[in-house]
Length: 315
Image (cartoon, rainbow, N blue to C red; front, top):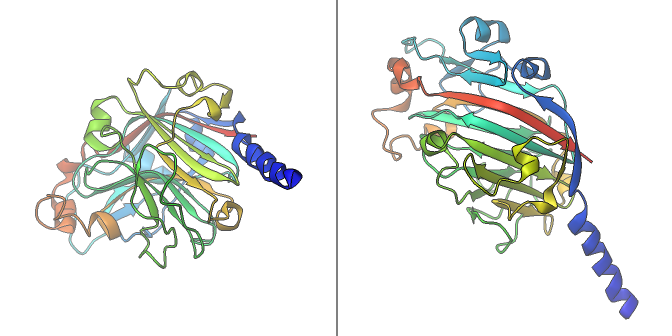
């Protein structure tokens, strides 16, 4: 009996330390985003009032700007749209490489804000939802807090009680069972999203994915407890030295390897669409979402990402 009890304990210890130490495999800053990511000029899968443009158009219209340690991507903020014409020009970037077990650390100075905006930093597999989706930074219409979410096919649920600082918004990650809501966790920091995030100078989001769990952390720019390896973009990191994650998704009743395949990293800004458009009025925004986007280009002067760098780590 003692041997049988020790074996599970050893397995637990292996799972609890596995993946704690990682080495940097990719770094993106400024111009290197343009070589490491592709502009996806595709119809918006979330049915937003946007027109995702190619790299050539994005650079020519200053919707993508990469210099020194700035990557800026934004929505057009000068054009009044025709009601029967295409949506507002915007940008969607996808990494050329795919990742499985990894840590991504995002150093973000500014994120899009304003009514109708739906910005996101996330990752997804080729075969959605069968290879899963992890939303790291996402929200709509300036409504804090940030929501971290997993989207999967059937058979992935989360325990009601887990060690995280955020608040669970659902335990079933299956998109079919939740009308694509997935299993979300609201980050407890009020300055983790939108205008408050920008007023604080942005901050750091980090995501760790192993075969045992997915974790996401947030540290505001001025937080004295930012781990030094995060703050400095170190070549090696140890996630065991970081504090309690904002969101924790264990494999207790969700086989991570089964539900999550190789992932591309994505940065995008859509407007209105399935989420932002659906709650636009309830969020206190004026008029109807599509008309607002069509007729008020000046409302999108703050609708941009400014990313200082992205570091990706692997075992």
